Image (cartoon, rainbow, N blue to C red):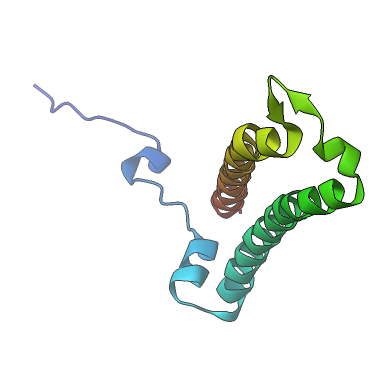
Length: 120
């Protein structure tokens, strides 16, 4: 009786290891890895500065609007003057919205960075 032999394709004989040169570049802190990391940091810094500038711009403009337009400051809604209503009920949800926008876009930037590393 003859011995049974299994024939396989050569690529199945050993596991294929896909080289990950970019992750190696980052791990070894080479010049190319430094460029990729600094690009990620710049993207996230730009996002944070934009969200901060818009948030501070809107919040800083409220006292100016109420000072320059005193008749707007005298408007009453449900017995509460408009400045107090905006400061008490509108500012906090707006800040939460800005935080949500920042977190969502920061995660998108990181996800795009990981995709870039995986597909190179």
